Image (cartoon, one colour):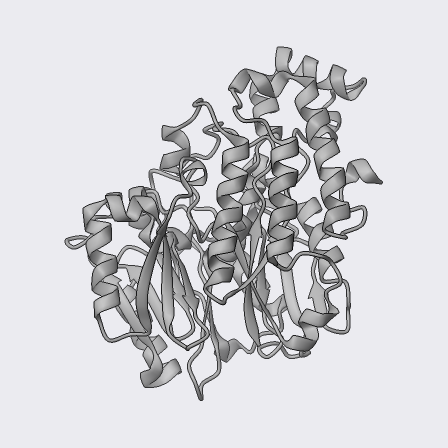
Length: 441
């Protein structure tokens, strides 16, 4: 079994809408000029770098934006051009919401479980319903179609529909999921959550909303046919959420038998670590940052925990961190300590993904982890696995179709929507996905 990082290609309407309460970077940079072409090329360069480390790499396509389907459902009529012009004139905030390119953060696309962990021996994926935020809830239907097209062979894959139930089963995807495994022990799935729909014994954050529900995390474990002995349901610390850690992966990241976390990542982090040591044995290692060593405000600013921790071909691990983690002294010192300690991590690399970071998404936000055997890999017929040739093709596609700059008022330009639809129609052919978008059906 091998891990593949499915990175989202940044979409042509990449902009700074400031649409995400609790995401401090999104709020800070709201309204600034964005650079869609540079953002997409930055993402492709990160994919090239990760693949160059010898790690499995693949891509997921962006979604059609603005979502004309959503605008029609909300009462706008006429041609595509008329709908966009009217929305820009009468409901500009709604146009910004339906134009969000947030599907680039594919850690929120779905939650997965590898075939070696599931009762039916298939790899399972459940697209996230993302009910907490309207602009993200629009993604679920298309994500389901895309994942269904890529993982179409039902002998090997089970792609579930997004969880029903609105806010009661609000699911934010793999940004709240960590799979840990050590030799000789069964894997443990951490399915974290921030609030409960029904329990009255839960302490909630007071400044920012908690997004994932306890009930959604329970449902994912059932859907993926995980043995209850392999599942832990830790609560995100309300203090961490109020500090800006809207998802677990803002303050914690795990890989193999290693977990890197901040003390405000989970309620009772010491107790969780003791349980993991009991379940995973001596092969489990961790690096815990305290508030004194790395204040939460610096962790949220620099995103060292939103790094990718990757297993290299020689069995050691590497951290791929955002450039902001090098520039922020407490974050850099913490990562240097991690590399110096007795754990599998032997190197850290800093990459420039500022176009994503300015909207609150680091390297780990940009990828969905999928574990595949060689047989399962061969069952995927879509052209989504990274090769130098695919990189060249996608870079040329971005350069051809993406605008260099994008301002808030540009979202009201009907030509932008036409450019996007043309680009995505071409992309589905390049990736051999078939008709996955509503405008293609």
